[in-house]
Amino acid sequence: MAPDPGLVRLRIALRAVLGVALAVALAELFGLSLVASITAGLAALLALFTVGDPTVRRQAVTTALLPTVGFPVLALAALLHGAPLVRDAAWLLVIFVGVYARRWGPRGHALGIFAFMQFFVTQFLHALPAQLPELYAATGIALGAAATVRFVLWPIERRVPPPAVPAALAGTGLARATTRQAVQVAVASGAALVIGQFLSEERWYWAVGTVWWIFVNTSSRGETLVRGFRRVLGTVTGIAGGFLVAVPLGGAPVLTAVLVAVCVFGIFYTAAVSYSWMILAVTVMASLLYGLLGVLDGALLLLRVAETGVGAVCAGLAVTLVLPVRTHTTNDAWIQRALLCVRSATSASVRRLAGEEAADPTPHAAELEALLGRVRLSLAPLVHPLNPFRGRKQRARRVLGLLDEAAGEVRGLVSVAADPDAGHDARLAAACWRVEAAVEALTSRDGAAVEPDAHHRSESDVHAGAPALAHARGLARVLTELDAPLRTPPGAWVVRS
Image 1 (cartoon, rainbow, N blue to C red):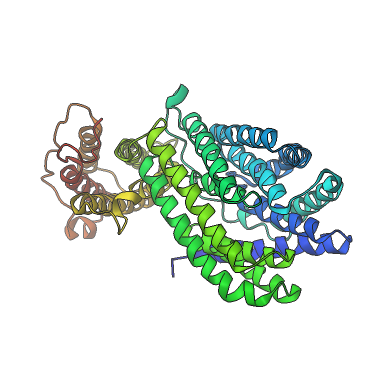
Image 2 (image 1 turned 180 degrees about the horizontal axis):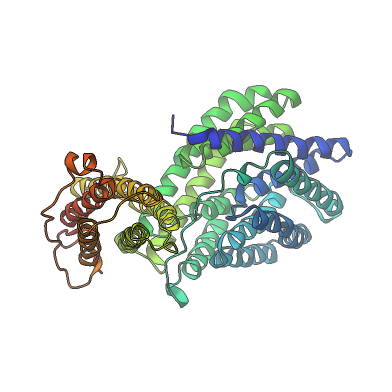
């Protein structure tokens, strides 16, 4: 039901199904074992899912680099299979380094996930050192298939570049988000590993996997707790699907392959809009793969729920007790960055309308869209249906609505600025000065209130041939209205630090 402009999500999901299917088909064609074929499918899925660099060239380089981290980790996990204590210590090290690598942007993020999942897949399939050559071949085939589908057969990103990803919040040492999260994830994974092995000596890795994925794309306590809740919700509903579909199917190869393809489609189609639906698809797919391996039963599915709960609890405790960052602190930072981006886009638009050819507001508008996505993620804990604080929920919704309205005015202003025949007058300069002053008041530390705007957008502005003026005045009005919900009583989230 979520909007899909240009059917981009649909095409990416269909391409993922094609890439994974090609990888598995080639593995089977080369006579590899069932374990190797599953490895190939999962490697192709990861290559298509995790690589998100801003340009096609960088995506190709990152894809080519995946074996440089995947192969050594695969060998390490297989060779340490018979030494549990050393294996566990090695995995915690991989986890720490994998999260820390996120400081290097999308490429570090993708390489870190791939390294972690290679260790995870080895535990999932109980791979042994003797199987390494076959697993290497399967992974190489999969990455080649994924690259062929992505960059040759169906290069969607050449026409539709991926959305911009805002840079991480500033910080040094343990205040840097990636460093802090590396410590939190390592601690939570260590706890999940111990408790998970107490529940099951064979399937303990599900608890560790839960911790890892809960911390992906989160930066505050609230975000992590909400993501943990959605992880458990998706797993429980996915287990219900496993009981209804995977258990009766009993590992029938053809039907299982078809349903796995449906799950792959579901993972990619829902990932951008609903974490719970994505995890439902992941859980059903895992149930189907266990059916193929001949180990699926009701007890295993229930154990999956228990291990997921352990991982979610460990993640929640770690983000609360280990170097915690409160939700409102993250809200402050992202809202301030969005407001400053509004000011930059407005300033560049006015300079462009004044005849300054070098001024280009388009990048600022694109950055604003990315920042608003991050603001929505940050405010998600406050607008969650289970949040008992109604006042905070209403303020968060109000802020989101006003920021969306501001983004609409910025888009309109940027569109007018792109018109070489658009006009510029003193009224527009004054209105944009009002925007800059409002942003300064909203983001300053002295708590100065935003003065009400004496001018509002009116139909006469538009009909008089002044659409830029109308957008600028509308933007100033929105920023004035933002002052009230952002100026909140003690104990609630605020913009000023």
